[in-house]
Image (tube, rainbow, N blue to C red):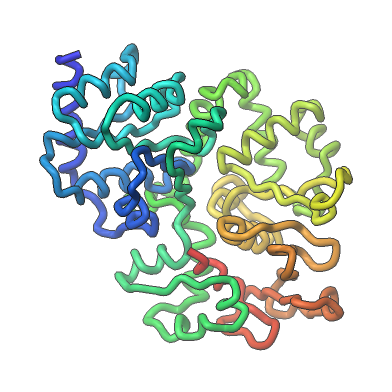
Length: 396
């Protein structure tokens, strides 16, 4: 164990001392100020979990010998018992350990629980969104934080080195976003670019190879993350790819379970299981019909790829209505409860109805509804119940 820890310390020092982005995502202060003994960060690959952890470790004002970063996908930890390793580090004075890629270790729940119970050491761990926490008592013991894709606000802050506000939904509906339009950038030009590129933090590392990195990320989620959960067998990955392509090329309203199963070569029974796995892995978003709030009515869900960058990476020319709704869903769902509505497109928090469309869209479908809003693409500023689509990229 001594040799493993020594090698781990060498790798840790190199990683923590590497050049990190100066921009810190919105969760940084939550992580830094948390008093929880164990903190978990989960999210899709490519959103910046490792960078966030390293920024946190670098900010700590304690002896650097008492801090350790490890990644469980490194060959060094193939046959290492996690609890025994952390215990050994703790006995030698360790105070904080960051455990990246925790889903690579099968017994992570058991060992993290033991660490919590028997060791006085702070743990920050990260895991794939496909990670499935099954122990309720374990969940109550630590703080979990979800790190989503970059928002339009964050994308603009990084690109232009500016500070921009976060808006709550009510502020957007009251048109509190107007000052954004007076900034140095052209909001519609940047928004249209953001639909294609910039959801994942690695965009700023190599913009030319961004689309290729997205495809690589999708494949890693499918072939590594989902298979590691034991829910998907390797021979079924091609079926999942067909499923994603079908969602990509379809209009959401046209999707039916029967059609989707047939086109993807999947049985209907397996389809529901696969959709749940893809949803948890943040490759798709499932939006339930509002009727399912009160009954077991078997109405189909609306299915979207998880964000618009996935749409453009997997489909050369995605349908414009699909792009708009995918963007809206991907950011609203992060903070609010969302259903697709029988009148209008979406019902948010059981209160607000939204109809999504282009700048020439009328309010015909929602004109008799209370708290109903028309969300329009290709406009900078709205008025009354007309809201620009881009504003929903400022919800976090």
